[in-house]
Length: 559
Ligand code: GLC
Image (cartoon, rainbow, N blue to C red; front, side, top):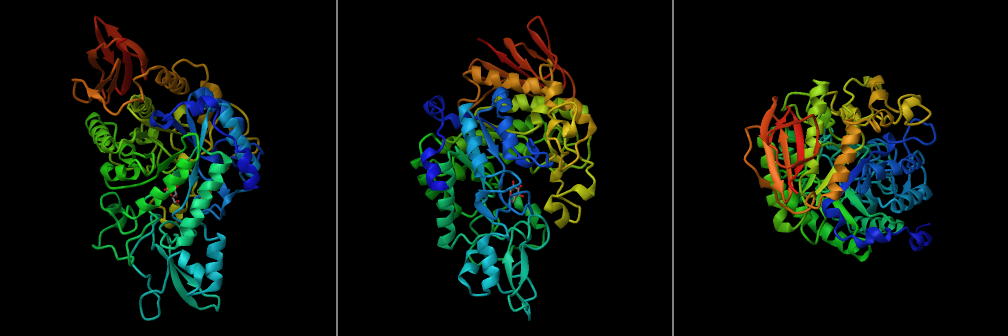
């Protein structure tokens, strides 16, 4: 269908096409397809469900929608294990649904960014199945990382790398003759074998996959594990006897952030630029520093990279200021916009992170002080949306959803949960389906329940319950996004001018716009900088001063 389709592919609307560099200050909303909206009552979200909710996203005021994977997949890692990169999994619909979704989005002036998973495939991918069938030395095995084991009988893994999900990064296969045989590399679950990007067929295949979706009319790609495809030559052991997962955040590992990965992106960029309509790449690249992240967004590579250093920052003025400065400094020389993100499908939602003491990391199982968490989350959002660059919103954060920390173990699906023997892998808590209505099966998510149970309190957090309610988190997001569109200084540029502020308070000016965020646990007094555009809590102004309650952010205009 691709050929016929490409001729008919939906193009951005004229208004979209006219606006150049739309992505530099875009607000991009992440949809997690299985948990957004279910059109056929099977308890699992789908493309048709997403399509039916596009007007909601338009009204929310976002510029683009990033869809987590909806490709044919056995769902060993919720779709990040792709069996066929050119097919939609039947649980989500089919290619016609994808086409209709892209077209409708464009009609509503929304762009669509799809997820691309090039580091690994599913173990049910045709290539991997053939590699297993055809045995050691076969051509298909070269497209993955197969190696003989160490030890007298090959009973030990080829090196000491550990999977991000826990346990060894290698699994031994049973050869077609029934004997224990070679091992293959999987940085994630065993059902996710890593591709060998040294093999030319892998690069050819992904360039073709890019074209397939570009021809379908998508506006860009979020690249999964964008720092992972190239491995250090010889697959060397990792030194030291420390916890490898701890090293991940601090050191360049032999399987992550290798310089060779940038050659791939230079080639991809040439392909993307052949297509009209300013399409973009965004990298999921976990690197030790923002300076290394900047390498991914050099002018001839990708457009944006997620700012995970920002995501990991506590609600603390000093830390926040530091990461904002480091980010802007790192991005300036390469001319890429900064990005800001607080939540996604892999981490505990920020309303719950901020409800707990700092320093617990991004996988938290405690509900903490929910009211405090929500107050800080709302303040953090206004801070994020006041920074120059592009911002990412994860579905449900606009409702102030907390993580569901008490899911029964038997409903959990995160493979990391099972591999980590319960020590890690609590990502299901941020993947619980969205409540749309106060009543009804799964609060309007669908008509047939939901694949993860929703807490009863979510009725009051539903879209219906918050719509039109002054001060609700949903209305705060809507207003913030419309102010952001209307204020020329918001989003644009690459710097902030810090203003003097009491300890624990962040204050900065950007042209006629001023943002003040109070991260202290108490109210503070600052100058009233002008006309209040928006505040995440109730503020009081007396004689030119503003009293800002604890954990509150205020936007002013001096115009
Ligand atoms: C990325 C995805 C995550 C997935 C992993 C393996 O980090 O965001 O959900 O488990 O890659 O594909």
